[in-house]
Amino acid sequence: MIVVQPAPKIGWYGDDFTGASDTLAVLAQRGQRALLFRGLPTAAQLERAGPLDAVGIAGASRAMAPDEMTAELTPVGAFFADLGVRVLHYKCCSTFDSAPHVGNISVAARALRAAVPGAFANALLPIVGGQPNIGRYCTFSTLFAAAGTGGVVHRIDRHPTMSVHPVTPMAEADLRRHLALQGFGAIAGLHYPAYGDDAAALDAQLAALLAGGPEAVLCDISRPEDLAVVGRLIWQAAQRQPLLAIGASSVAQALCAHWGATVALAAPLAPAPGPVFLLAGSLSPVTRRQRDLALSYVQVPVDAARLAADPAYGDTQAEAIAAHLLAGRSVLASTAPQAGAAAADVPPAVVAAATATFLTRILQRAPVGRLGIAGGDTSSRAVQGLDLWGLSFLGAPSPGVALCRVHSDDAALDGIELMLKGGQMGSDDLFERLIHGG
Image 1: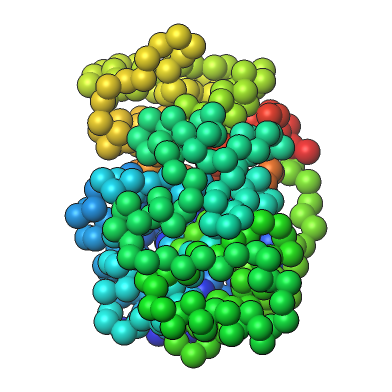
Image 2: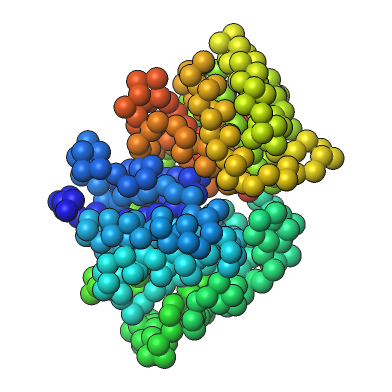
């Protein structure tokens, strides 16, 4: 049994690495002692981390089939039950893109709750929709999302990127219906107009919803003011019995808003200590704009299919990129198809493994002080190939984007600054600021 005293208030599992780091940023910016581990931490690693208010695990369940998800998440649920957290947060993408056959959120919920029977069996299983600070809004259980930072807001099933996602296209905007297709039973909706009631009236409405025996309650987040209201409901229930909560980083935002933890002003991002290596695998138009404006990098297109099929090709590209880095030039390597080219017809897991090997080879040849991983399941999983055991928060160069410090037993990796971002996240000049600061 792992004993951490006092027990962390919250534990979270991120269904991809970039999303997990966003929750790390949310908690750390609000004064919570938080650390994100790559996989289940050992007792020794927890001891090295010191006292923590929040413990995170970065995973890749968003890209897994149901059986693989169950095998991944069952020990995670047991770990957090053993740790004694009051809230276990399954951090999914803010756009909830998932499907019955991949990244199934219902499978995740049941695996985490079944790991230790009764541990997270609270009658309330809150699903928190919306995260306004990154342009995600949930009203009457219907999800809306901006197309990029500050972009036009679309209903999620009409979103120019998420409605045509290559793996998990969003064809339904009502999250209750979307999740029912993945196997959830009845999902009650707690809608934002009720948040204007006094606390007693809102508690009574939630109790009435729970009396109907739903599997989950979907809570709207349509504006920042909604966060503290939902956070109170979650924390109040968690004091009676630990619970599982599902949603984007707005789950952590809601709890912190209820606790009165406010965002601390951060210092501007400092210029990079040397050349930067940035690996971009996202197909998102947002990442494409960031890449097009990244004029301070040597840009190297990398064929994902060849990377997966031909180790010699990966070695050649790694040598060329390392040579640029050793000469002091920052490099942006993109595994996304170039304009007019079709996406590689290679299983994502195969590309992910090849990309991880590719990244490791580059860093072995040319260690860097600052590294960026930009979006995509493939790129997100690539960082899991690095010999690191944890990440702590350094700064947020853009909403939804985290800059972290790497914790590793490998001296060449320990202390690297690592930027992680989802495909839809970040301002247009983000990649430039990763070099120049600001």
